[in-house]
Length: 198
Image (cartoon, rainbow, N blue to C red; front, side):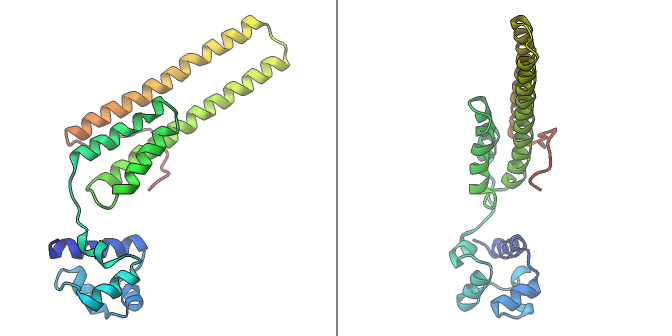
């Protein structure tokens, strides 16, 4: 690992923990100037300094030293495709990308941003799908309570079936378009989506 990556890693870990350089200096027992020099790549923490930093950042010395941001286009493509799990069960479109995002979000370039976009979109899509199902159930209960004819109930169910198909086609289209965009190193747009993960 080069010194620049180590400096970036210390800064990244500090920012992830949400603390300032001053607080890191206080919690680690190091001087503020030492923290600044490490993050500005003017010095490399070793021995006791590295140990103090790792304790203050709730990590291990090995994680600080071995870390580097890598680029892995294949992983980004695989992460994008993983959202297709919704085809088997709607929640799989969230669970599979979530597991992949959590495992590599701090280790591979663009995984954090792509993972959040996919998850925001898939969570939003799943919520709207379930809301549609809830409305369908309410409509069905109302039709039973009103004692409507069987042909009316069948017509009602047939009107909801295309809506579900459109939901699925829309999700599939967004995933495929964005996977191609990721493959071509273009910006991805998983929209519309609620901003659940920021």
